[in-house]
Amino acid sequence: MATIYIFANNTYATLEEARAAAATKIAELDSNPTGYARVKLLGGSEADGWEVPVEDLSDAEIIALAPDDGNYYGVYSVYEGDMQVGITSTAVIEEIERIKNNVNNLKIISREEIDP
Image (tube, rainbow, N blue to C red; front, side, top):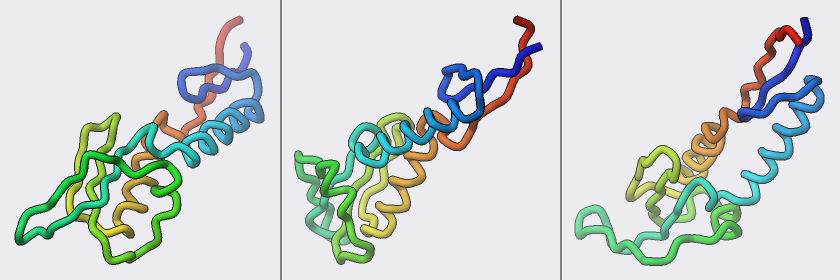
């Protein structure tokens, strides 16, 4: 029997290789949030109705979001199809992290025994 490690539907001969692949994927997702989420800076208000712009925030703008910046946002999860409207920047930061962790089950490296 041989042991293989699986991460994001790819197999690796060692745990170290699987962890390196996971680290690379996490770094890629950290620098490219628009690959899995769309964020818009909203105008208006909940009472009067939200004004949703055509433009999404860029990767750099999403990464640079500061907690409690006083603005309201809309966040759409590309893979899950969920949308939240009228949430704070703090909630956006948390939602982006949640979505990122769901992409490819980033925290899961499984170990299997195979018969070569």
